[in-house]
Image (tube, rainbow, N blue to C red; front, top):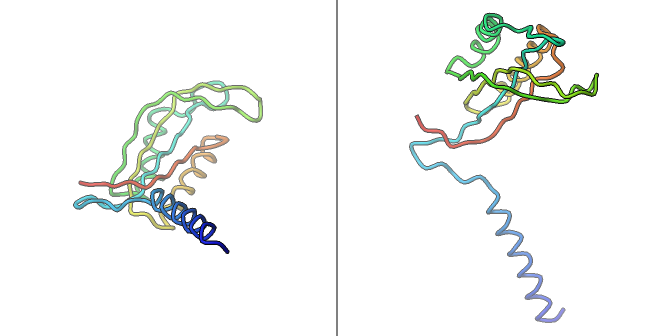
Length: 139
């Protein structure tokens, strides 16, 4: 192997390592700490009508979400749309966006799944979109 080829290979390897480091999560600066944030989107239509009332969603939150995430959460009124795969149509509906920040672990992620399954079952929903991200969080 020539010296030029060796320099090329080393250069490419160094570039790959540097790009990999750039995409790694950066540590939080104190007093912030690394936590997970979940966004859960709950549609409120059942069929073509609003079937999940404010009271029903509040009861669902008290029974299914709060016990699993007692440290706190936020519920925001939203308007969403999604494609109904059964009917092939775009559905626009009022929604609830629930934001939860928590110390990440397998049980908490399973709890998010259990919440989504409970909502789908109770309110006959096709899906509950859940997004989880890592964040630096300070209180």
